[in-house]
Length: 178
Image (tube, rainbow, N blue to C red; front, side):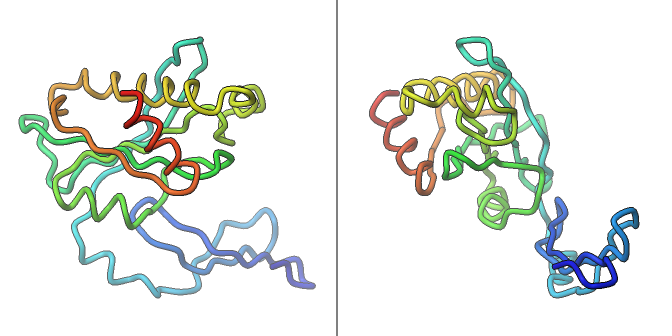
């Protein structure tokens, strides 16, 4: 919402905090948090999210996020779960997401890939899904899985997948093809 004074009010998340209400008094000012509805989260052990990148089979630069469990140790082995976003016009970002955090507390490494069609890597990547809604995104996701399975703490024998909307379609496509 933009006020008559030019102030902008909006909701936003931080990597370790769910949505809160913020204000910017001018377009140049620093956002100032107005609410603390989710202050409780500071008392909960959360996993750490990082951005990962990899090359697709046809040369695109793909990305996504990986959420490591709280108290992560690179000396341990962890199962991998893919959480595939809907859309495909959407993207997984470095922001708070409750479902992956819940999965990470169970000891899973959570991978949220941005496959072709995602809207965060430019028009060419977003348009690359046209006429290729199954195999192309599927290969993108599996290339990301291969990149993660190369890490010594990812258990290659324990991988799960879930998603919603288009991510549900991609979940079914991956199970049927891999």
